[in-house]
View 1 (cartoon, one colour):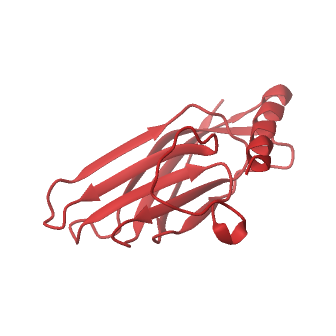
View 2 (cartoon, one colour; view 1 turned 90 degrees about the vertical axis):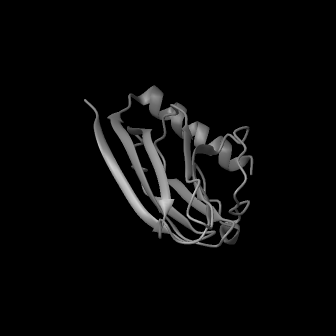
Length: 150
């Protein structure tokens, strides 16, 4: 039986939040079912928010590649992207979200970048379920492989 876990937060420009999902045995799995972002002050000045979810820490301070607004789904570390934008004259609001069906059992990292240097709020829903030993091993090994390729 699965259940839904939700997370929300306010993230600064070039900021990163860690969502702790890892367990000692790795037998709890998660799948993204909803991810969205919005300006922390909708209706304010122009904004171009790119909020992403990664399998590994992206902060250059911790040896990651750094936080930016580019989107590359060839990056196996990237799980999801949510964008939100508006013109400075408060028109032409846009948003989009893309994510896959990958099963994860380790911590994930939410990053944010805005060309206008503003903050954004995000909302994330994960489906939580029990993994068998084989599924747990595969999910953990995928995460370790991505960490070693950085």
